[in-house]
Structures are given as structure tokens and as C-alpha cells.
Length: 452
Image (cartoon, rainbow, N blue to C red; front, side, top):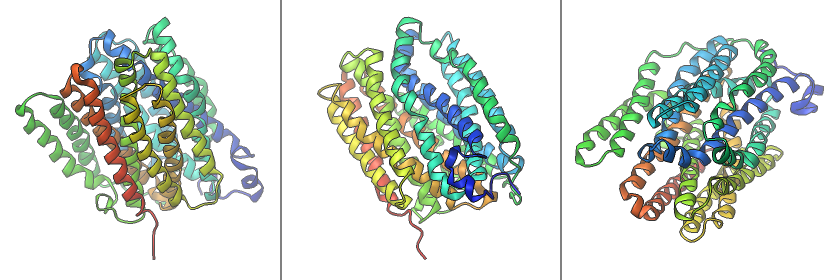
């Protein structure tokens, strides 16, 4: 019997901080807070890094490299976590994340910085899959929505101070300390979670992973990188490169996702598809807002961070609302998809006139993610057998990271193609792309409910 599956009613009544749940809850929240702080801060300081390392042409790769390697490690982690339990994969993932922080913080060139971000992605992918399985094995079904609400709450402090602190650190101490300063903080967060990890056994009936998943994962990760490289090139000579990347995705992706995901099949396949579409659209916009603010409206890194902070607060508030509600998760996912679409449209229009107008617009987009992401995570676990929780959580993270990496990469190619002289036009076209992807997410969100 896995730890935490059968809980006494008294423990359940006390909630996620009750006896038996307090340790894993605090450990998970603290680790997510650390990951969230890095994620929020790096978006703010990326324009500073690109200027310092003369790497504007690799701006999008500072994000895409992390997402691509997260994709690869996510696939490898799914079966590993189901077979061995989440403890060893989780600790290995955190170790790789720390190594990536050190490499990125010490990088003398933009290429080495991108390499450090790639190592971070390897660690993040393994850690996230393991964390989902911890939640599935420790908490009863009625508490899972509250756990995911607590994870969103873990974004509150990073949302409040992450972008602004990242900007202040970059301006006064140097952008490198945004990465190096986080390294010592990993140790106490990890120690708090170790006792809970030791008490979780492997699933009783974890299926052996298909051998085709590993070459498929390699094809998807390589195909994504080749596609983004081809899109980032100039001239028609790069078209065969981009087509080769698409071929890798076409071969590998159907083997990594549940059957019917790309055909909007009801239930679990649509849950995974909606997650990828909304993540791609939202984080694509989130990546380019600081660039628009600093280049078009002369914002400092600190001021740009304030705008992103507002969006994070909207995310956290909406997540708390859905986590305590009894409404069906499908309805909150649909509401969230609509709000993400509206937020992207409003932010894109606002950035053409005033930087500060983007702040209230991004509250709407952040609220949409708060309503949808936690609800989609709960739906995934509810629709997964115990022995398939790792693999299905892996598929969710694949959709998440692949959607983000492809959208950010394509938008980066668009912005680079328009050039610095027409940056406003390039960002407007990218915003229209983000809005279209989010609108497709609304359509897919209508297919979440499983019908007899």
C-alpha cells in the first residue's frame, strides 16, 4: 500500500496542513516557491542579459532551451517515477536544477548562458513529474484541488517580489546573482521534503514503459530544437531544416501523448491539449512583455517586473477561488481559457499605446491561468489509474513545455524577422498569434467533460 492513500477522516478534515499532510505540503510549497522565484525573475532580467552578453539574437533561446530539455527529461521521468517512486527522481532533478543555476550565473557568453538554462530544464522536468506523483499518492481525492491551490499560493511571494527583486538585483548587484543567489536556498527546501519522499512506495502495478517512448522523446526534443533553429534562420535555405524538425515532432509526439490528444478526444486527451495551448499562449505573451516595456516604453527592469507581478497576483487569487469551490473542474478550466484569451488581446493592444496599461490587462490573463491550471491538474489525476499517474503527469508536462517552447520560438522568429526598427509591429503580430492559440484552447476546453 502506498503511503498516504488511505487517510483517516480526521486527517482529511484538518486539510492539507493537518496531521500527516503538514510535512509534504510545506515541502512542496517551498520547492515550488523557489522554482517560481527563478521563473518570475528571469523574465524580467532577460533583456539585461541579452544586452550584457550581446545575445539579442538568442533572446528566445534563453527560454526555449529550458523548455526543450524539460520536455526530454519529463518523458524519461514518467516511467522512472512510477517504477521507483518519486524520491530519487525528485532529488536528482533538484541537483540538476542547481547545476544549471551555477552554469547560467557564471556564463561568459550567451551560448553558455543558454546551456545553463538547458541544464535547469533537465532538472525541472524530473522534479515536476515527481511532484505530481507525490500529490497523487499522499493526498485523498477531495484534498487535491486544495493542494494545487496551495501551489498557486506559492507563487504569491515570487509574484510580488520576484520580478521587482530580479530587476533590482540586476541593476545594483548584477544579473548573475539572480541565479547564483538561489543556490543556497535549495538545501533547506529539500531537507523539509525528504521525510515525506521516503514514505512513498512505488505503485503496485506500474506498467513497464514502452521502448518506443525513449526514441520518441529524443525525436520530439531534437525536432523542436531543429524546428526553432530553422525558424530563427534567414532565407529559404533554412526551410528544409524547419521541415526536418516538423518531421521529428510528427513521428514522436503521437507516441508520447494519450491517443486522441491531437484530435480533441474527450476526457484526458483534451485535458492535456488544453494545458499545452494555454501555457503556450500565456507564457509566450509573458516572455515578450518585458521586451516590449523596456524597448518601446523605456521601462527599467524593475518597472517591467511590476507589470509581471500584477499578472502573477491575478493567477494566485483565481487559483484560491477555484481550489475552495465545489463547482466542476471543467467549468473553471473553460472560464480560465476565455480569460487567458481576453487578457492576451487586451495586453497586446495596451502595449501599442502605454506600458502601464498592460498591467490591468495582464491581471485578466493571470486570473485565467489561475482558474484553469489547477483545475486541469485535478482532472488529470482523477482520470488516471495509480500505475499510470507518472506517465500521464509526464504527458501533461510534455504538452505544457512543448506548447511553451514552440510558441515562444515561433514568436521569437517573428520578432527577429521584423527587426529592431519594426519591433512594435513584430510584437503586435506575435500577440495576435498568442491570442489565436488561446482561442483554440477555448474550443478544446469544451471537450473536457467525459460523457457516457
